[in-house]
Image (tube, rainbow, N blue to C red; front, side, top):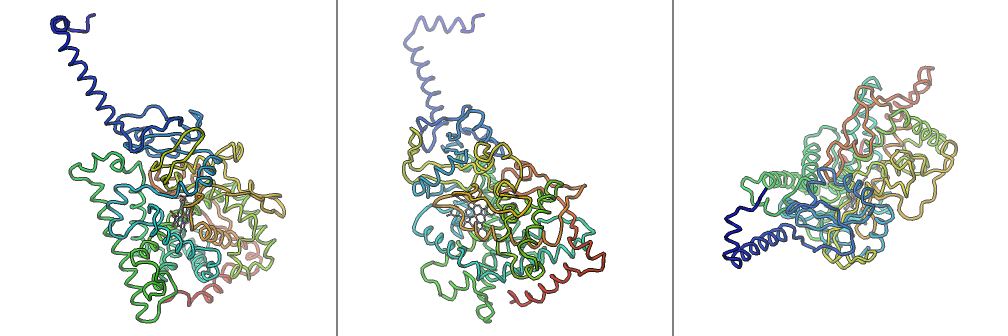
Length: 553
Ligand code: HEM
């Protein structure tokens, strides 16, 4: 079959030069169009593998779908490269996957990877009024000061100042679960209690304010708006960050939604600050970051910087801690997990023979090895921030024959690193706290781990300054819960414990665990039946008495 029309052939024979020019012009046009639609902020990086199949304009965005961490984890094993380059629309990014490579790139190039990229939706619209949170700030003097102040507030030496806060907040979880489960008769969902726990902690640090009700309107508004904003930070939800033309679409819903959320966030941040002002006037304010600055005790930071620190702390913990702790309780509530609970309970009693007294005062000491192992494994297995927070290079990075240029986005696949079978062994995909212990079944001790245990808190210059307080909060809640109750998964609504599928919202920056229910079985049930002490009631009565004056306005 002849595919070229005969008139063309005749024309080409009569005017070959004109025809050649047209063909050349079309070729140049296609080539220029291809170049234009595949152009990236940073040109192709030589000697660094690129994942095949990128399309003009979108690059790899469509292949990546909703769940970037899992797709990149699959690419690592499929193509055999732990470090590779991809295109997110017009942005070139380097993805790092294995445990050792993530550690090497973050620790050996700590200064070169100190920056964070800025994104159109989050930085240009949402953050236009309150400034950037620390985790989204590019590196400059202001970011250095904010990070330093946050790190001081969250440092080990400060933890003792927060003992009342740890006490009242972890007590309130048990108090309300005891009430709502009608002493164990009714199955409960853990998440709302843990959300209040995490949010109250950072609100107390920042504003000296806490909310007692799990369904307090302000508390739910902060959680709702915070979650919605975190969704607007993820790459899979925001193609307009990487495909600029989408920003100019008429009736841009993303922009309208971002502005609405920004206004709602501004409203509650103002409300909180005004409450602190009122408390200062009345002399009822509690020691906290914003009261210190409003009273001008801290002079090096500007008002905007203090607002940004408070916002960073509030948004740093309210989803990450519930994501980790709730999912951990889910794993513990399964039949296999109940064995871990029994061993943790035995270990608590081994360390605190007079446990009733310790429930009130030693709950946050982090001295029970089995509990420490449960917490560490929860951090590893449930990598709630599965692609960590994006980094950007401030200088060239030499990487095995390639030069990653200054200004390149670097994505750490923490989920892949945390489930790397070459590092954690063939059971890397299983929740098993005993991997961190010697003699797990009797008198366990913690194994020495040189360097970082897992990648959930990041590493190097921009690692999570909240890791200490997060670990203490998770430990304290588990100490109080597991020493009083055995947590048993609901048969009708059991937890999903798959390390990818437990997450109901794959495109969010921080995982949102699927809802599940548990039954609470009292540890003192037998003793109680035999006429023994009502341990639960007595620790709760003592706690109520002890904490009743804490953080009252
Ligand atoms: C289980 C709980 C938590 C997890 C899994 C977590 C995870 C992370 C990760 C992955 C990063 C980025 C690290 C990197 O780039 O290397 C980060 C940064 C950060 N986190 Fe956390 N976090 C948690 C709790 C908290 C808490 C409770 C706070 C504050 C009270 C907090 C405040 C921050 C801040 C301010 C940054 C930004 C640091 C910077 O960019 O310099 N985080 N976190």
